[in-house]
Image 1 (cartoon, helix red, strand yellow):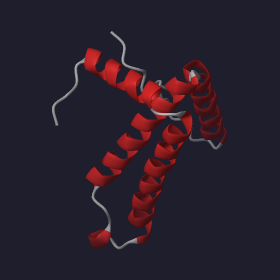
Image 2 (cartoon, rainbow, N blue to C red):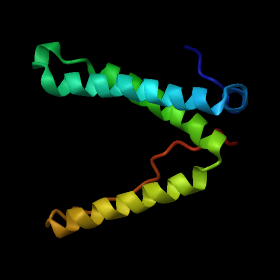
Image 3 (cartoon, one colour):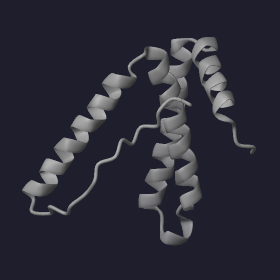
Image 4 (tube, rainbow, N blue to C red):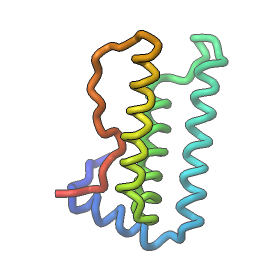
Length: 117
């Protein structure tokens, strides 16, 4: 697949946000998340020779994140979601330190930002 320019990505995200109603975008997140859940479940429960390849996990995780970005943009909750991600990572870090596994880590923002220039 050809990579999109930043401008094309912005236009696509805007079109998917505006041309699909909220219920449709929610259902697409659920659909993609279900596919990721299935792949991860098989990765855990199948013998190594029958596990899905890492490429499949990457594909499905990317699909979930792409659809979440559209939904989060449509709901206009980007800042709130980013704040929650930061809060959750802080909580996880505190739990790690409390358990004595205080490995020094850098917490990066992990949610993809809408296409920006």
